[in-house]
Length: 382
Image 1 (cartoon, rainbow, N blue to C red):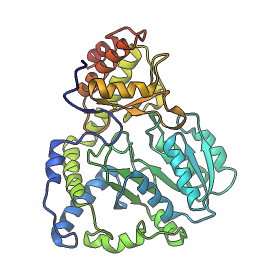
Image 2 (cartoon, one colour):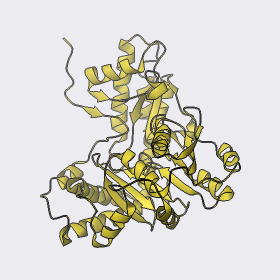
Image 3 (spheres, rainbow, N blue to C red):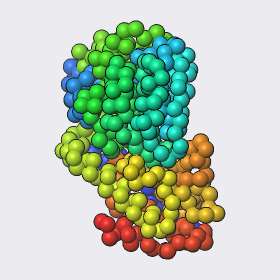
Image 4 (cartoon, helix red, strand yellow):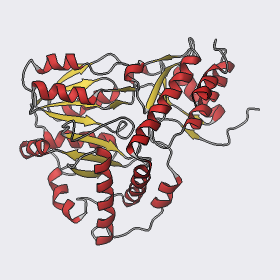
């Protein structure tokens, strides 16, 4: 009889594991969300978010997933018929396309090969074809384990069309990879609580530049719940337009304290090292990685299983035999890859343990691997 796993290990790119400090902070009695106690909490959260975003811009938080934040960015800055370019490098680039088309926006779906980042030269050529209202792209494409060069893409937009909006989905990238909102002149940046912030799903944070506010003033997309203007009326009081998810906000306050204690440089170094450790182990075992080293995500790694083994079978058996949850391939990559998350509250020993389980599983399935080579390489790097 197979031994049932004693513990559950969450190794996906979101939701991510939650630190005890954050869980404890969320176990807080409810307080009036229109009163001074909550206003104080919100001020601390907003100050922390501006630190994380590296911005002086206004930031609003909405009770939603990251996709809600993406829709917030679209409906508040664009109008039906506006021309936009979407640098589509995976499932979430495709999601930006779907959101924009749902609101009647004229989309140039600039699709790149899966496993590759957006090419600034190709973007520049498209920008030279005529004016666009906005360029939208992901900082980190979770579905493929690829990070875009946000700084270079932003410079490309500013060089060719200086007044075009730059909208960045940084849901899975913020605090895992460098992002400097003000220095790189980014107009709308979206993040989500369930990624490197180490908080459960349910909060989307959106930063808004002066250029984005001007776009809001002429935007004709229908909106109410997502409306920047309604949030702006409440923001000076430390309130939100709708009832906020108080428990999550208490957790966010604590997570931001933890992150600031660690320091931005250390946070980014931690994510980079976890990426390198996992990729080192996978290469040593002879596994193919979807993304090249030059664009490899510090948040999640997409791995191709050995020949003859289905990625979905890997997920199933990792969960059933070892209690390790890894993520699936999405869209056209379903069954062809599986993904291991290494952002947020994940350390090197978590990754080595998960990879050890993976090696045992491949051995059981009869894959031709150099058993133990991946874990050994990871330990040597550690």
